[in-house]
Length: 372
Image (cartoon, rainbow, N blue to C red; front, side, top):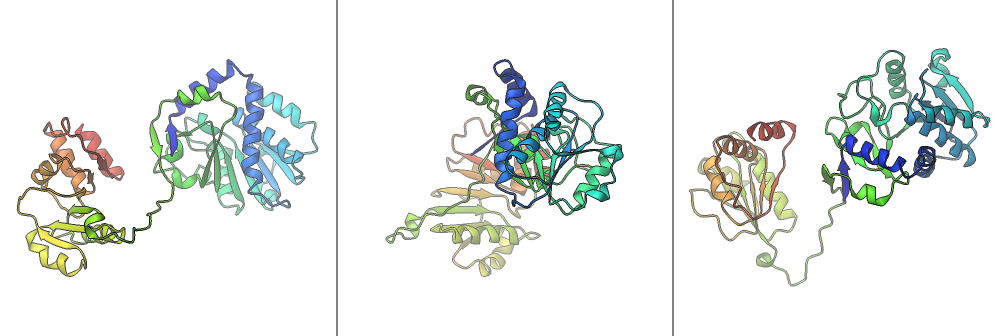
């Protein structure tokens, strides 16, 4: 289970940590943790190009470059992209001067001369970005995305942030290491594909501070392992599922769900559909019971799914399902029916004590948000 917080919360923890631990100590620890992740991805022969911004993300990048040198890598180049620097950046650049690492500046460099590097380490902006990148930086990012090199981003791909929309001017990373905790920007549906493989590293933040983070979401992306069936198992011991879905226009979605439930080893699967399409659904769902729903009580099930291919105007049936004490998953058109019930101030959820899961995409989430 992964914890997701907000950038503001992570900034609070960072500032609180700096009251206990010197900023440069945290920075060195963060760089070392990033290097632990990066070094496991590299070949010993890999050439490394570090893109360095003017803030603390760039300072982290220079510290990582030093760790790469200590780790035995020699084909290392640092490309500075800014003209104004944070205090920590100035310190890290001074430390870098003591190493035989090539340093270049963006305004004086022909990017085509850098096309041979195997890896690009992106340390330009980090999570502090609050507006789109422009000018030379947008040109640089476009070049990175077309370079063919493997890209490793520190904190978050440059050009992304909580307040920044996805555009061509954000780096598409193959790997990203978050510092301290994942944030909403790391898992936003519009940006997740730009981050590649995600890692998280603790730059020595005290655990009590990390435990104090407000949790915006939890991510469970562990592989689902279906346990082996007991040799004596039969249909009545493997759970009973009811699926409410399918309509004349959309008969396929609920059939797919019913077949999936059966494939996942549910013992009894019942698909309730409109009478008009009973024959269609029944002829295409082997091993699944198909029944037209005529308003009867919904009892005796271990779980209910409502919504796939359901169509409009299902509020009355959804009221019946919400009144049960059975775990309920609401999907697709069921979410829209729920939104209409919520918008009409029908009080159905206050007394519900069984688990309920919604599975909205972005458009359905907007409908729910507008309803409440």
